[in-house]
Structure formats: structure tokens, C-alpha cells
Image 1 (cartoon, protein in one colour):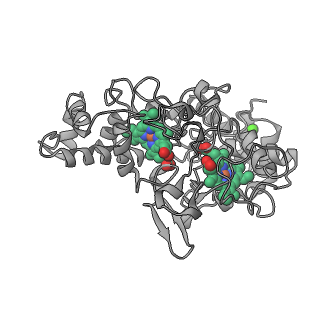
Image 2 (cartoon, helix red, strand yellow):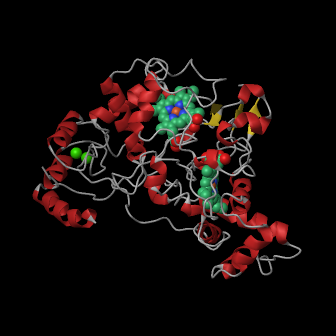
Image 3 (cartoon, helix red, strand yellow):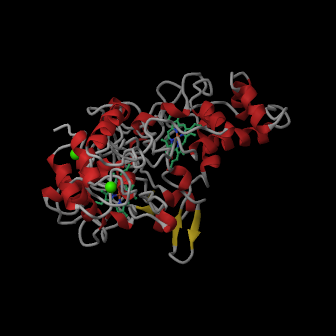
Length: 439
Ligand code: HEC
Ligand code: HEC
Ligand SMILES: [Ca+2]
Ligand SMILES: [Ca+2]
């Protein structure tokens, strides 16, 4: 809302300064949610419907909450076992929910012959080809939404208030839970996948995106973090979590969708260890073998899919704990970064699965404490929903001497300090910044 208030104030300054202001040309429309197409709206209704579990009460969003970056919404669970409870009380799966946002960009699961590695797919172990195939699983998984069969899901959709929307999207008679059940179930999954592919789920609206758009500078610490993140002789994170825009300015996804065993220790609090033998025959001896099970190859055992780093710091409140890695063993970004930096030189617990561990690209990075903090500061720029405040050139939340310094440093050139968007940083931009000064 500060935009509206500022507009009047800035206009006045502009007139005072005798400058022609083309306001709002450089500001990004904030807070206006993108409009969903009918199929996306249907998918959203399905994604948030808590009547599609048995017993009712659990939706996809129960484990993929937007405010938590489309992942687990319970700070308490994240701080401990990190696995969300299923619809049936007391039943748990084996893994931490990854983000359902940006998952749509994962290519269909396959083997890249040139690079000789597996790429793409959904789930930590790549067992679903794509998001539509993925969406069919949770409804029927006994430790998730626990429906007996697809017909049960279909009938619950038929009884939903958005059932007319289903037929509006897919045609009259399409919500057929009898002979047409298989197709209907596919359409349900397709609609969810359409929502997961929507701009609402993948807004690319983080501070880093605005930085790539040339609308904001990073703070010195964030910029240092980005450098460390990219540098092959420093943290080298970008080797697996690419940070550069692709062809045509395509925004980076911070994953190459490949698989690796980075030696994450087991999470001793994972509730799966204590599940009944019908669910976990191995009990406490169970080990997460990841991709190796999907493709039935020893060389791939223990590898998990490289997750996106978008929204890794997105949380509903500052004190909210997030869990990281397939088993949620790590509990903060500081811990994650310290793990990459020191896995092989400090006394970390041994890897959950000790074979095929990557000891070439990580484990002993030699980063200083300042470089570790800078990395964390950079990771915090990846949360969606960043709003550009005109004049706040480094996005620090205040318009102060640092912004003035950035503007003067960019004088005569282009970039984020060109607040009126006339192509050059000059007196008009200075007037805008001074007018919006918050100190
Ligand atoms: C009880 C919690 C729970 C519920 C309910 C749930 N999920 Fe998940 N979701 C998970 C977990 C855990 C994983 C990872 C499982 C694995 O890798 O074996 C996952 C994985 C995913 C992925 C894969 C993301 C990636 O990058 O690989 C997507 C997409 C997803 N879920 C969407 C959905 C949708 C759509 C629904 C509703 C139909 C749903 N989830 C319901 C917990 C849940
Ligand atoms: C060799 C590839 C590789 C490199 C290099 C790498 N990562 Fe990862 N990253 C992965 C894989 C694979 C996972 C998932 C591992 C697992 O769950 O067992 C992961 C997980 C993560 C997660 C957890 C995300 C989540 O949603 O749980 C974060 C955060 C992360 N990496 C940050 C970094 C940072 C920061 C660096 C640089 C210091 C880095 N990564 C370097 C492959 C890599
Ligand atoms: Ca600032
Ligand atoms: Ca200008």
C-alpha cells in the first residue's frame, strides 16, 4: 500500500524539482495475484480441498503450504521428524515434503545419454514422470490422503461445490466416476498439474528475480553471497543449483534436476522408523536409498533429486522452523551451509547411506564464517513476494544513505537507480529518492 501513498508524495517532489516524472514505469505491480485460467482455478480448488482424503481433513496444501514455500506447514514437525502425518492419525511416510512450487519445470524423468545421468521427474527419488503423474499418488497413498481407490476420490470431487467447474473445463459428463473413472482421475491430476504450472504457484517474484530484472541491487552481503555461491573455487553451489538466467532471460530454477548423494545424515527422529512392519518392514534399520530403488541400479543408491532453492527461506513467521534435505535432518540455512562447508572436516554424523557420496564438489569448501553468512544472506533473497519500494535501491526495507550512495555510484548510467525509467540515472531520480527518504 505504500506505493499509493508514495505516488502523491513523489509526484509533488517531481514537480518541485521541475522534472518530468513517469511514475510507476519501473515499479512492479505488487500484491495483485495473477488471474487463474479455469483449469488452473479447478486445480487450485482440488489442491486445497480437505475432503479428498479418508478420513476427510487433509489436502495437498496440508503438506505443501504456500506460506511455507509450498512445503510442510508445521514448525514443530519440521523441528523434529520433518515428515507430515497422513490423514490416518499415527501413520507417517518416510520423507519431508519438497516444494510443490517450481516442480512443474522438472523435465519428464529420463536418462541423459550425453551426460550419462538421470534427470527430471518428481519426488526425491524420481519415481513419478511429471507433476500430473505425481498428483495421482498422494490420494491413494495409505500414509498420505489414504483413499481406498480412485473412485472414492472421484465421488468426493463430484460432491464438491466446484464440481460444475470441472464439467465447465472438461465438458458435460466429464466428471464420470463409473466407466470413465480412469480418464476422470487423469483429468483431476491434469488440473492439479495445471495449477502447479500457474503463475500463482511460480511467480518468480523474489528479490533475486527483481535484481535480475535490474530493479533492485543486492546488499553487499547478499552480493558477496551470490559470488561465493557461484564460484567453482568457493562454494560451487551453482554446479547443481544453477543461478544464472537461461536462454532468452529465462529465470533460473536453482536446480538442474539431477540426483546426488551429498551425504546427509539420517534424521533419527524420522517417524518412519517406528511405523508398523506392514508399512516399514525394516523398522529402525530402514535406509532411504533414493533414486537407486527407482532405477534399480547400485550406482544410484542414496541419490536424491537436487531440490530448487527458491523459497528455501520462505516461512510464515521469523521463528518458524523449516526442515531441509529429503529427511529434514538439517534445521536452518546456517546449518545447511555449514554442512556443505565442513562435512568432511568436522564431526558430522555419518551419511544415511554411505556409498556413492559426492566428495568431489562439497564437504570441505574452506569457507570463512563471513562467507557462510553471506551465502545464507543470498539464499534469503530467493523468497517470492518481494515488493520493490521505489528508492529502496538495495531492497533493505529502508531508504537511506546506502541507497543514496548506490544512486550516486550509478550516476549517468542505467540500472535500478533509474527510478523514473528514462534510461539514465540523474537529478530526477535523485529527487524521487530524496522524496521517499525514510532514513
Ligand atoms: C501427508 C503429506 C503430503 C500430502 C497430503 C501431499 N504431499 Fe506432496 N509430497 C509429500 C512428500 C513427503 C513428498 C516427497 C515424497 C517422496 O519423495 O517420496 C511429496 C512430493 C510432492 C511433489 C514432488 C516435488 C518434487 O520436486 O519432486 C509434488 C509436486 C507434490 N508432492 C504435490 C502434491 C499434491 C498435488 C498433493 C495432493 C494431491 C500432495 N502433494 C499431497 C507430502 C505430501
Ligand atoms: C553436487 C550437487 C550439489 C551441490 C554442489 C550443492 N547442492 Fe545443495 N543439494 C543437492 C542435493 C542432491 C540436495 C538434496 C540432498 C538430500 O536431500 O539428500 C540438496 C539440497 C540442498 C538444500 C535443501 C533444500 C530443501 O528444500 O530441503 C539446500 C538449502 C541446498 N542444497 C543449498 C546448497 C548450497 C548453499 C550449496 C553450496 C554451498 C549447495 N546446495 C551445493 C545437490 C547439491
Ligand atoms: Ca535501502
Ligand atoms: Ca532516470
